[in-house]
Image (cartoon, rainbow, N blue to C red; front, side, top):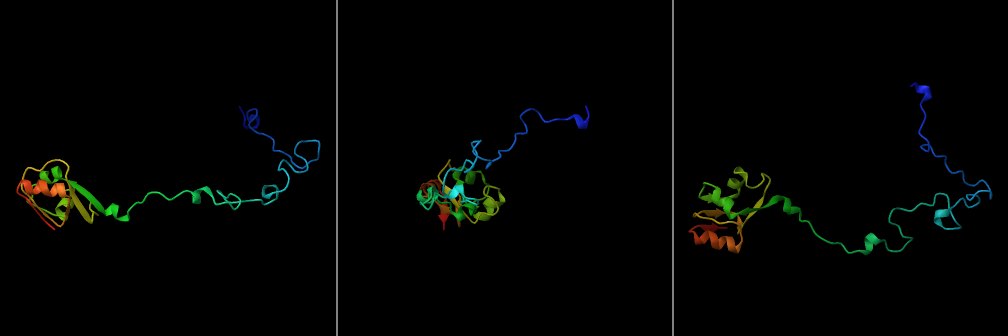
Length: 144
């Protein structure tokens, strides 16, 4: 095989439509654009989603959902994770050092998931009602 013998496969190079060449073809006069209107003109361009002045679909539909910017810096801590720690006083710094919450966490909340079997003191963390009851039931306390 030589470079001068290489050819494109059949049908790979399609000839472009030659428009505006008279009434003998279907693409004469209006060149397949129809009569009048923005799309028939040269430069007849409109942005994506434009509906001719009608309120576009993306603006007619209601906005849904909300993502809090603080959710990135917030974390949830389960009771069984607290139970696995050796310390008696649990605070945010201890949770970060133990890799229970990410290092950039600014606030954490103890939730009632799992069980706690020993008395601990929670300092500077938010605690749900059920988690607080579980901690106090085993003799622990919550300091806000």
